[in-house]
Each structure stands twice: as structure tokens, then as C-alpha cells.
Image 1: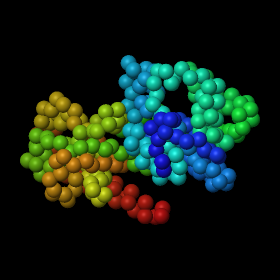
Image 2: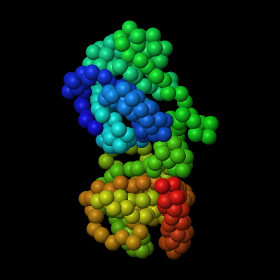
Image 3: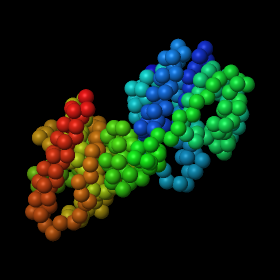
Image 4: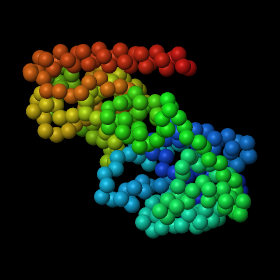
Length: 317
């Protein structure tokens, strides 16, 4: 997959099969669009093009509103590279760009800059100034400018339309199982291991404190989670805590992971954490002994969850 930071880097194609959107999370619904994009591309001997935007439009249009995202632009690009996308164009989203009319978007960008012959969009896709452009407009203008448009209907999972917003709500509620089902993969957080106060070592549960690299990354609800940790392409089982460590009087929210059967100095290393299930909420224990007893139970629960998931993955292959 070729990546372009702006339209000026891109050379117009003879037969472009195009889709457009923020694609935050590259979730199950997005994957259906990408699957169809690939099918049409192969059928017509063209090249697939995905238009996306950074910063996220809401960060520019509504700077005072808090927004957390499922994927950084780098994570998004990596996920898209695994979906047979030939060209990824990252358009810098600015206030000026937001004022482009839907008609100019079609004529100047889709047609003149890219060479669109087929356009694939998701259900209720909007574009152009004030999101005024719609499937109806594309269908009307397509024959005029020489391209065809196809709309992918709502993608349903147990009667719920998949959306990035619903995944965010599930993560905020700590419902990792639903979030992962909608994503079609485990929710991941990429971070750097930093120095902590090393309290975990004193209770036989050493932890790696994680500094999240992408500042807009959505952090799941506070609590204890069964996770897998990727370090240098190797995966380890573990359990992760998001919270304040109230038993020790903590006042700063932290993310720290206990990697099972692991004894390496990894300060300064970058790791990726895959979330699989929330085990429990964070609570204040009466004493350190009670905390240690609960952590042993948490580890047992985590291992059981991860083993079950591993067995299910083996059966599905």
C-alpha cells in the first residue's frame, strides 16, 4: 500500500475504485466496505484508493469538544494495509478544507485529482461543506462525471448497526467483549514503558507502567483486564490495571500491566496491549494482604479467559 500525505503527492489513475471516510477503528462495518472495494477493484482491473483525514474533522470543527479515538493515523494505516488497499491518501483536514462544497469535492477531488470510476461508500455517508453531500447527490452526479457509486447498507451485529461511536461507548463502559466483536479484533493500546514507583515488586506482582503515545487514544474504563502484551513481535499473557491504586492512596490515574512469567528490564521499550475482557472494577482493599489475595485470583481468572480465547481462535482456523 502506498501512502500519500495530501492530494498533491498523488498521480491521477486511469481507473480508481475509491472510498472515503475517517475509518476510525477500521471496524467490522468498515471492513465490509473494504471487502467490497477490493472485489470491485479486482473485477475491473483498477486500483483501490482510500481517502481519509487527519486531524480528525471533529478536532478541527469542534476544538472545544473532548474527543478520543480508537486509532491513531499510524494504527489506521497499518490496519488498512492488511485489507488490500492500493493507495491511502491522508488529506490534511483544515478549516479551509471543511468549506469545500460537495459539488467541488466530487468534481475537483474525486474526478480531476483521483480519476474515480467506481465509488463505494458506507450507509448514510456525508461529505463536503456542512456534510451536505449525500448518496443521492453522488448517484445524480456520477453519470455526469463518468463514475458509478455503490452504497453499502447498514452492517448489523445482533440488530445493532456497527459504528465507531458505539465501540467508544462500549470501551468507556468497560465492555471489551462487545467492542472487540464490533472491531473484529482485540482493542489495542500502544505505549512506552516508563519508570513507576515499583510498589508491585513488593507484593510479588511487578508491573510495567505504560505511557500512551497517541494523546487522543481512548482509554477503557477503570478496572482490571485480561490482556496480551506484544513486545518485539512476541506475545505474553498478562493482566492490566487502569486506575488510581486506592489501596496505596494513589491520586494519579495510571495504566500498568503485570506480564505473566516475565522477568526482563523493558524500561523505554514500546509495547502493544491487546484487551480481551474486564475482570473487575478497581476497589480499595482493607490491607495489602487482601489485595495480594485478590491479585492471585485475578491472575487465575485472566489465564482462564485467555486460554478460552486461544482455544476458540484455534477452532476457528
